[in-house]
Image (cartoon, rainbow, N blue to C red; front, side, top):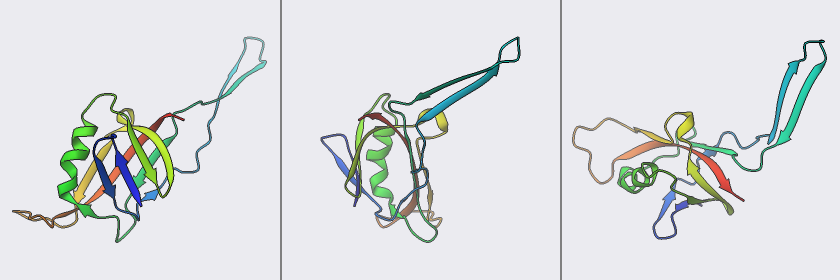
Length: 131
């Protein structure tokens, strides 16, 4: 099960969403040369800030569009911290606004007057903000 919560409200996300950037390295490195030609390499490990991108797989990952108002409310609140439970693995996250939209969706199929069973294909972009 995949859920997203602010501590008051919880939204269940499609369980087959794929965490596309799961294998992330916290190592950051810069490389420059001094005026004498010597290599200057600086290396450090990120404390937080792991990207978590959840995308629908081909032919799956759909959710009811009725869940979008709550998701969009969180998305549009600056600094909103949420708890993401990804199949028992919990992370405190924020939407990743610096990397495009933090949340977007496309209709599963176009409908002029979508009903309560209207489905969308979501993409979530988060970043971890607490251990």
